[in-house]
Length: 441
Image (cartoon, rainbow, N blue to C red; front, side):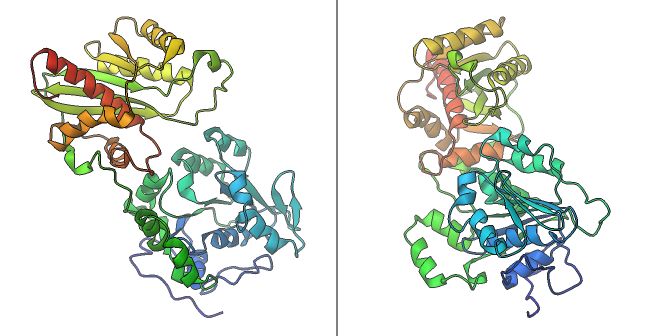
């Protein structure tokens, strides 16, 4: 096998390579690594994101990385997809490993979704479909954790698995590795891009791989297939472009000036989009199950016809977590801040509002039934933002807020909770302006 042609210094900034020119391979890896895969297997960085474009050989690279040390006594590796169904699909990680390992002396333990090797090493296949599923690995100890399609996972799922890695007792030569392969797009696009392409960490590397890096694929036919996609998805999958995103017509991030603080004299409202759970179903809901929509609370103020988004509280949480979140936010905002909560239709919505009115005794708490389409409700805020009348107070939430607002109205808009809470805050402040004879609304 010829020595690998290394990527550019820019691509491997901060990366560490072993002093040999061939990666560690064994009889359980029948696949001959491509040049780009060889580079990835030679890297000694504990965190690597491989890929970008589709067809770069991400899944094979992860499988080879996980198998590199299965000849070592009691080595343990874990490969993850977001759902088990994704891992089981044709050409996904489970059938790929069966193709590679069935002819060997490795044994498939179907009950535990684990390959077992004569060395007593293990390679487990897992999933994290729900946020709480990360705790399924609480008792595990791994030297390799690999995420296939990382942008489909949440940040907390990724970071939690760091608690499950341990140095292999008696063999310090086996490295601790958290590797991932992914294309741009998906629920985790922003945090993955920021972590691997924006933030600079000495032991964290992004290794781009594109279609032309994988000689095993018919590139011409694959490009024809991708040509049927929309321009944004095509750029993400063909070029591995992490910056291109769908952009709606309702909001543009450039409309929102970021300021250090709001004026001292102002009227404030905190509006909540709770993604409420019907109280009758709360008892049946598992406390640890916090998937689904985010809870979002937007603190907005107004001064002389200019609106200031001062803070966004956003979280996936349980019913008890919602109560804690509202109580803490109300305490920090102060009793001069009116609290509005989007009220679900019917009697269940009335019960929910009554619950929070009782919880927040001493605050001005109101329910607001939604009226009309979400896009229609957001249009007045859009108009004021385009006119330069909506400012953001500088804070760590700014980036996620702008990312969501630009996607409103597109198929890529996975969430709209921040937009909903901001629209409700704005509408209530605008009503106050109309009452006092203003024209901003």
